[in-house]
Image (cartoon, rainbow, N blue to C red; front, side):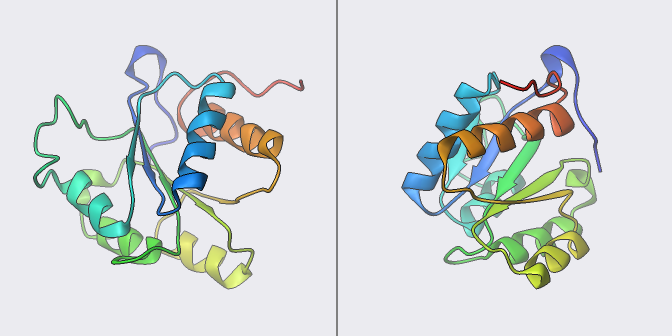
Length: 152
């Protein structure tokens, strides 16, 4: 798994989230945290697989580049986050894209299963926006090569 990308090669973020309110909050938190990467949002695991495999309408890599990071919810329709992680394990060409689970699940079994299936991080969605911004800062610093989080 890739531990981070540097400088101008920081790439894009693929946000896989079925709840539009959560997707909006994560996108706002990324902006607030100073993450400058473009964010592509898909609403379920099936769309994530289509995006990552370059199926239409995501077949134009100039418009829909492979992400430098995937932020993945677990509980979604069509394909769950677990199923997306399992699919990714079968794709050697995508193995260097880190996946951080961003979920409402506090179950230790879910954390263990996500890590077993290749997730490099597991974050529980907070209620407070400021907590979400801090999580995003940590993700940016660790997996996207951003500056280390500061105490603000």
